Amino acid sequence: MTRDIEQFAQLGIGEALTNALLEYGIGKPSPIQAEAIPYILEGRDVLAQSQTGTGKTLAYLLPLLQRIDPDKKESQVLVIAPTQELAMQIVREGEKYGEPLGVSTIGLIGGASAARQVEKLRHRPHLVVGTPGRLRELLSTRKLKLHEARTVVLDEADQIFQLGGADDIRALLKGSLRDRQLIFLSATLGPDVRALADREMRDPADVGIEPEQKLAKTTQHLYFVCEERDRIDILRRVVRHYNPQRAIVFVNQANTIAEVEAKLNHLGLAARTLYGDADKVTRATVLSQFRSGKFRLLVATDVAARGLDIPGLELVVHLDPATDSEHYVHRAGRTGRMGRKGLSVSIVTDRQEFIMRKFSRELETKIEPRTLYDGAVLTPAEAEERRSGAARRTPKKSAGTSPAGRSEAGASPAPQGGASDSDAASSARGESPQRSAAPGRTNPGKPAASAGRGSKGGKKQPNKDKGAPKWLKDKRSSQDPS
Ligand code: AMP
Image (cartoon, rainbow, N blue to C red; front, side, top):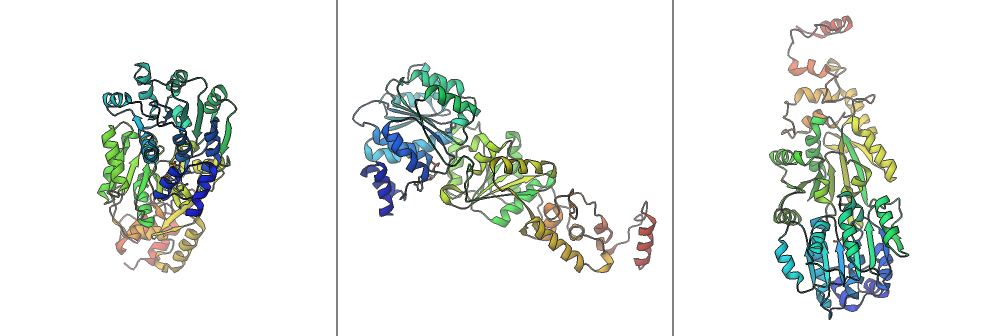
């Protein structure tokens, strides 16, 4: 570790900061840090493509904190972030690493009391971090003055645009010095970000991971197919199977989030929600409880969870598939951070399966199908093998009954979200044969293979032959002992 830290020194990071890094357990620069730090120390504009989890925050904070003159009572660096959480995270890092240098930090974040922020602004904190709306508001009321800001950073620039912050950014850049240093960081370099960079930057240094590698290499991407009504049940079994300490569950609609939370809690999976429009205190409380392990599943929308850094998050579940591959990148980017192993699991209906193939193609990443079968996670081929093996072992009497069919017969009908926890019940309600369209697969949700019902408790069903083809009636009468 001591040796590695010299690499930070070689990039130009001074002793006060390398000591602080060591203190916080950071020993070696990440690739983006190694690339970006020298340019930023030089004062060059930087356009960096990098997703969260790569160490991008310190890639700009360390050199910028070091370039701040703590003796001048001036706000010298402005960092703009799309969401309150990300802004707060940056404030926390700024405080941690600014303190040994005598650098003061302020967060100008929507949702918190503006009056207190204005009061603090009077002291001209060196590093200003904020969300676009609040910053613009304070700029327009002249509470915030940007004529001393030598550097402006847009963190997660693509998200700032997606969340409608383009006008705010225009106003903030207009209010800053003409020859300020500009640093843009973005997971994706879409047309908006590129246009802004072309217009505002001077000869920017391009910094970035390989463009095709938008997703962490250490994250595995899987998907499970089920019927719409079985989503929660599959989620439950995925959580049971992988047993993560913490996981984020993404939903697309904010108005379904409370229902999902209630269902998960009903199933005994401690869950809480992160709403985009919840007040700042509630959001901060939920996040700190999640970080400290007070509950296990954080149910969130894309907006609410963007840019979150939850150390050691092992699993991300897309309870609804992401709306496009960019959202997929942002969601999956919550796990597999800084070289750790991560898992991203999407739950889709068979009609949504094409979305997985599309993301896989667009992101040049394998997103592979899996099946839950008798409590195990199997590839489709393994599941097929198990199913045919089980069919071979099936006694003649119930020949034609798929394993799923048998389980189905044995399982009591579970409510949606399936309170029953037995593997038999599990395999019956969506895990084994989720892909009804594919040959050789059955669909327990839609028990088309209804032969299983015929063997229900061996009871005779009075009208069972009604409408059955002749060969089946003949077969049944030859088998029926009664
Ligand atoms: P970020 O990509 O900025 O969201 O950072 C992700 C996480 O990695 C944060 O918790 C950082 O504290 C941590 N981190 C940043 N740089 C390094 C590094 N060089 N080595 C190990 N961890 C780091």
